[in-house]
Image 1 (tube, rainbow, N blue to C red):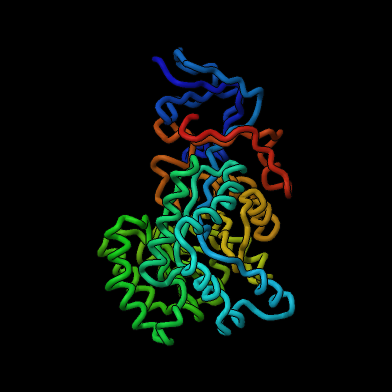
Image 2 (tube, rainbow, N blue to C red):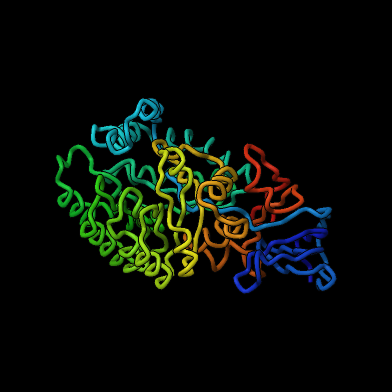
Length: 401
């Protein structure tokens, strides 16, 4: 069989669900054709392929390309001033209630053109791509009106055409209450479900729908209305849940079979069990935990106890996690949340793909899946979360190239 490319001399972590641990294969080979994995396994068992190119990796490690499954990468302005306020003692909630927080980014984003949003997001995306990221989710949520939300999502889609990276777009219109709503949360949610969400879906701009269920954002009933509207339009849902308090967000996400529930610092055992039962991924965001100087860690032991899948993401955003390094996020997951190397590696590959609904063709190294690879100059994979400020990426492979 004639194929495009073969890599030999590799140590491969397939992350296949059925294999023990990370699915490690020593002295492995991997073949690609038409952008997909044609074969992966021990080199001695590789079929006699006729390859256009052969590359000896000289013992380097190969993992699936990394996936950042929760970001707010497209926005206007920055919130450095609020960082100063927090250093002086103000809380995230106090700043938000005083008209800062998300609404300050809404003002800057509404004033930005699509071209400006793309231009300012590209350096952030490039930083992630340089660390081996081959897939990323990008949310809206800084427009809070139909036109700006659509502009954010178009900018996010444009990033995927400008760089070799797969982009999932998520509509987060239920992120905060815009000032023109004059405190009427129910009225805003009614308009979002009646007008904004159908427009976004009709233009094909969103792959999923998200909401922020919290005391400073939206209630359980309001969030449920958004999810019901998304379901009528055939869109899967995700949820910012239990970040600042336990309002039952994890359980609500599970009730709607959400792809993921994210943050989860205050999730209780019932929520963790419900997520496991529903197949909803727990997306942990240590960057926000670190940046906001939180003290309540997500209940990792409960997720382990109930078999809840765990992913890790940067939560890259201007207010609570201005982070553009998934490698540093991996270190934070280890040091702050006490995740193991195996959990971390799965969390930025297989489980991140699961959180985006991509597991059928991404997140593990298996024949038939996209050939998106990260090739590392390390002796052992523990070096990836171990090091801080280092990037041992040797080569990033996108669709076999």
